[in-house]
Every structure is written in structure tokens, then in C-alpha cells.
Image (cartoon, rainbow, N blue to C red; front, side, top):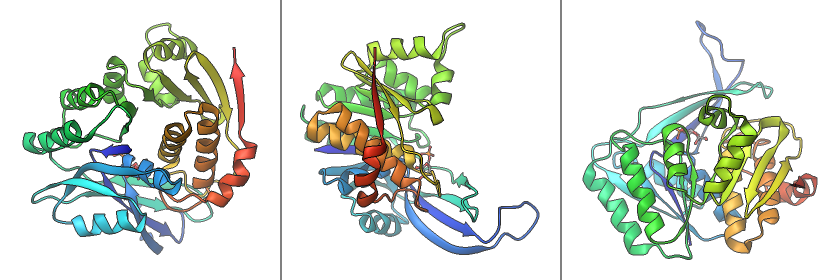
Length: 307
Ligand code: TA6
């Protein structure tokens, strides 16, 4: 089983504008859609779509749980969220300019998580995790869920000997590295943040790959570098017309883990994930990708083994 943990989920409210977003004028919307948000949930969507059993865990607000559950169920995501009383799951408002001119996101303040609520999640994991499971922790941390709480969560997963993947940034990413989790996927900006004085990105990648079993370092248009089991690969994604890149990285992570879990074949996982993310950016919401597209796009993915 794969478990995704979204500590700070969101309901994405996608607002399609009639004209490009402009300050000091009434910006009008032609349509509004709702989608899942918060990163780990996107991973679950991709895993479910690829036919890999998974369960979306995390915290959610009790006050608007029906709306949150509706979005999860519309996306065929099995879930088991721990509900926070007198709270609402936040919305991420994504304003999308017409003619593929990009989007602007504003995310609302997050839930506040009590010690008891954290214990509920930890107890659930202690009771259910096995060494055969994969766990993905992705997205930002909610209020009062500290870096130490995150470290405790990682320790709980590691104690079960489950494969621990982390799609995190900032201090949370640093904790994942120090805990030597099994998978991280820093982007260019996150990698640069980790550099010591005079250290190059390549040197950082070599250092990280000695600590983390599977490292995928996205290099923007240059593609991504994957280090896994003492091998390195350069992955060049297919070039496609971008409509909305929100959730593309999350789609990559979810589909990568789904295929690695199912096949243990790193090149197959990289190829499928790259094709799924390329499909995703061609669609207007935060998560959808097309399996038909993937069949075609996967042949356009270049995977170059590096020395
Ligand atoms: O990566 C996409 C996304 O999950 C959006 O769906 C939106 O909910 C946002 O990121 C949330 O980001 P955060 O870093 O606050 O978890």
C-alpha cells in the first residue's frame, strides 16, 4: 500500500479570468472549478489513476469536510483524514489568465493542529505501516505542526521500515535530508538554498545522493537529474503547450512513486512520471492528466544514463 500524507491540504478554487489579472480594476471570471490541493492529495490522484492502491491521510477541517470529501471523491481518492474541530480546510485560489498566459495563486491560512491530533496520525501509522509500504509526505506544514513534529513523523515511518518519500521545501526539506529519507525532489531554487559557500549544484547533488536513496533534482527546462542505486540519469521531458502548470511537480512525484512501487524499475518510473507531468500541464485544473496522452508522450521522454 502507498500512503500519502498531506498535513496541510487545500481545496483549490480555480478562477478562469476573462482578461489578464489587472490591479485596480474589476477582474471578471468566466468559470470557477474546484480541485484538490496540498500536494500529497495530488500524488494520490496520480497513483489512483495509474491503478496503484493508496490512501490519502492528513488533517482536514471539520466545518467544511463535506466539500473537501466531495472533491476527493470526484477524483476517486480513498482517504482517511483526521478532522480538526471548529476549523475549515483552507482554499488555494488560483486565478488563471486566458490564452495560457499563466496563473496567480493565493493560499488561505492553514489549520492549527493540536498535540492530540498529531498523536492520532502517529498512532494510525504505528498501527498500520509495514516494511512493504511506501509513504509520501508532501506540501507545507499547518500551524503548530513544527519541524520537530515533522521529524517525529519521519521517525515513525522509518521505524516501520517503510519507503519514505518527501516532497518538501525549506527547513522541512533539510530535516528530510538529515533523516536520510528514501526520496526527495528538490527544484532548482530549493537546491540553491542548500548550497554552502562556494559549493556547486553538481557537488550538492553528489552529496545528497550519498544520503538519500532516490534523488530527483529538477533543473527546469534542462530537465531533471535522477540519482538512484549508484546510477545517474538525465531526464528530458517532452515539450508541450502549457495551459496550467499548477500541480505538475506533484503529478510527477505521485506517478513516479506509483510505478516504482509496482515495478521497482527506475527508468519505467521516470519515463511514466515525466509523461504524466507533461500531460498534466496541458489541462486547466491542478491535477488532471490523460492516460491517452501518456501513452504517446512516454515515447518522447529522453532518459540518458550519466557516468
Ligand atoms: O502544488 C500545487 C498545490 O498543491 C496547489 O494545489 C495549492 O493547493 C498549493 O500547491 C498548496 O501549496 P502549499 O505549499 O501551501 O501546500
